[in-house]
Image 1 (cartoon, rainbow, N blue to C red):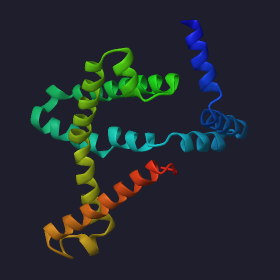
Image 2: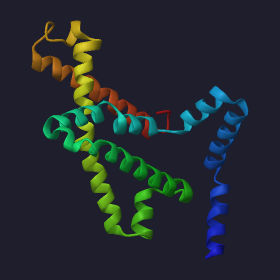
Image 3: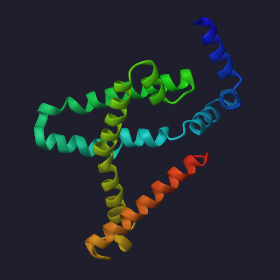
Length: 186
């Protein structure tokens, strides 16, 4: 067992991509302050986007809506959901960083396929349910705050304005995903 672990550790330590990332971190730490922040920001990948989705305007909108429905009785639910989200992200990050493999493959192979696929289904449902207000917020921001003269209610009919704003958001999201898939910064 220890031979297998040492082989895995050796294989990971000579991986050129990991070594390059390690060097970026060391260079950033040597520069201190802003250099360290920029190094970690460069290597965080879609973590910024996931953090914005998890703890952004959608969480606020959901918390307000839940407050309207349940009053103070459900006040505990949003902080608990955020804590669970942080625990889940930490567990996934630990699995990914310590093994160098994708988390779903690791969970399915080492723990249980039921847990792995259940985690995937729950993540997809959570992203759909908790992230949909983000898109509504983006469309409303475009129509009311950023481009009211072009997309707002005074400029065009409600449906057309929402449709154009939604297409703009969709193009931005797809562009970001394509940049990330191609290995660029994102």
